[in-house]
View 1: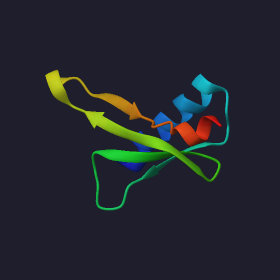
View 2: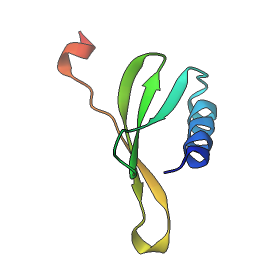
View 3: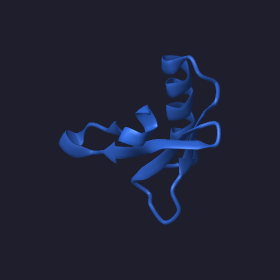
View 4: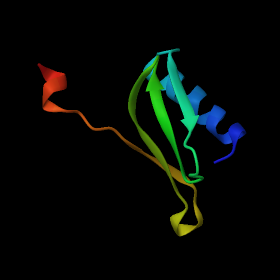
Length: 69
């Protein structure tokens, strides 16, 4: 993912969730994914999916049991 693509995804997520604090940050040494933050808190990883000749994105977020307490 290049910087322009990451900025488009970031703008989409901000609109979708109504949260201007969402940030999408490139991962060092990885070109097929980026990290997603709300403020300074890491919340998940966004992966590129180029299967079937159509580009899409998968967002993976883990929620720990301790986060719910």
